[in-house]
Image 1 (cartoon, protein in one colour):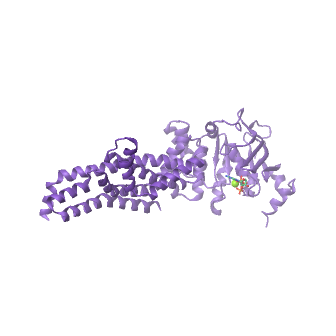
Image 2: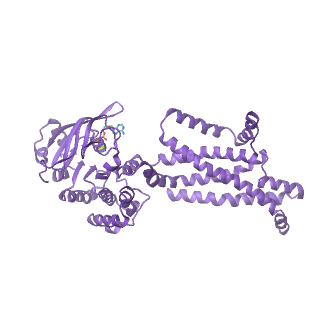
Length: 250
Length: 217
Ligand SMILES: Nc1ncnc2c1ncn2[C@@H]1O[C@H](COP(=O)(O)OP(=O)(O)OP(=O)(O)O)[C@@H](O)[C@H]1O
Ligand SMILES: [Mg+2]
């Protein structure tokens, strides 16, 4: 949405290679994410999009390459991921709210127990964030009482309540009924407008085009093409990307 | 009826004494079963070491296929004979019921932990929870709900099975009743009492377990 190429690099992944047993899921992936940039990762199923996001916050370990964040290489063994995860929020396809906790407790768990912030202050912030996603009246609800779209918006708020510098979104609308996709995408668009740095994996092409500063197209564990959204969707550089996009046209 | 009540009332001190023995063994066994079962269950759910897993399976299988009665004999007669350890009937009983209960409990714990999706672990880690916080605040609270029905059932089974301790010389409520029968020749009253007693102890637990099971489904 904005020109960010000159902004400082926040996360610098270089030559990241990841195996599941003997199967190569990421092959020499290099991607620098600039502050306030919105990077959208596209690619066919199984190409390693989720794996790449999960490597960025240490849910997977990598076998080679480096991930630099605030001057440290997170890919080295022995990294303490807990402080990193407070600065890199993640939202999952299946929401993953904690079902035994109310919305309030879902939102306070991180700020109060991980960041040791005062409860009253964390609650005030959570209420403000809920207001922004249109769920101010849901503080006392339990996840089972919410629709998919509501749950996903709460999950976004849960990540935001840690005050992260970067947000990772892994196909966050893929499990939603079509009529709920919009309410979640609107929240993410709002974050982009406010200058949040984000890495987004999605299959919503219209949304990708609208929100992205840069499109990264992956295939078979590799980055195949990096392009501006306009160029990627009108005249992609690679044949693979053309073939991929043709499957979304009727 | 009046006669029966009078008989029980007169022998109340003896019966209570036996009841305490029964409940004491059941309570101690329940306590150790929960602790041991939780540890073993968590180990079986998350420690993917071939030797550990095989050892755990062997332990479970031993208590599954060999009757409790035989285990009581082993700990009351065989172990002391072989080792010069002095093991009282009560100690043998608590040991056997604890080992048996822990093996059963570990199955319940492991089963419940396995139903928590991997993604819940990811979500907990993604907000920066430590391993201990993740387990205490996210995983176990969800798993405990699923353990409760099975765990309560196990307690009722432990209470019922305590009646076997008679054979290693523990004077529990069943043994006390038999002694009173010998003296008073009133088997009907005392067996009716035992029936009602075990029903009163176990039926509420059994109902609670079924209620919880329904609620979680
Ligand atoms: N836990 C795992 N164990 C083994 N292999 C895995 C695991 N997770 C992913 N893989 C494999 O790694 C490759 C990349 O998977 P990944 O989930 O990152 O793909 P993706 O691009 O996110 O696909 P999708 O669009 O379907 O979500 C796939 O071949 C997948 O089968
Ligand atoms: Mg994926």
